[in-house]
Length: 105
Image 1 (tube, rainbow, N blue to C red):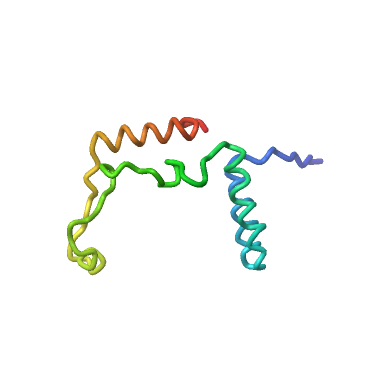
Image 2 (image 1 turned 120 degrees about the vertical axis):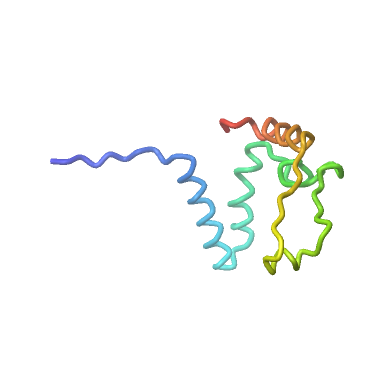
C-alpha cells in the first residue's frame, strides 16, 4: 500500500499560483482582485510600490543606458549591442539586492 504524502508548496509554486490567479482575474475582468493579488504580497514584504528603487523609479541619471544609434538597425539585425555596464552599475545593483532583502530572499 502506498501512502500519498503532501509536501509544503515551495516559493516557486506560490509565485506561479499568484500569477495564475492574477491572470485569471484579469480575464474575468476582476481587475481590482488581479491588482490586489499581485500587490498585497509585495506590500507585506515592505516594498515601496510608488517610488522605490526596486521597480525602476529613482534611478540616478548617471545609470540610465540610452542607445546612441537607431534601434531600427538592431531590429533589422544589422548590428548587435552590449550595454556598457560599469562599476557604478555594479554598486547600484548591490544596493538593490540589499534593499530587497539579500540574495537569499
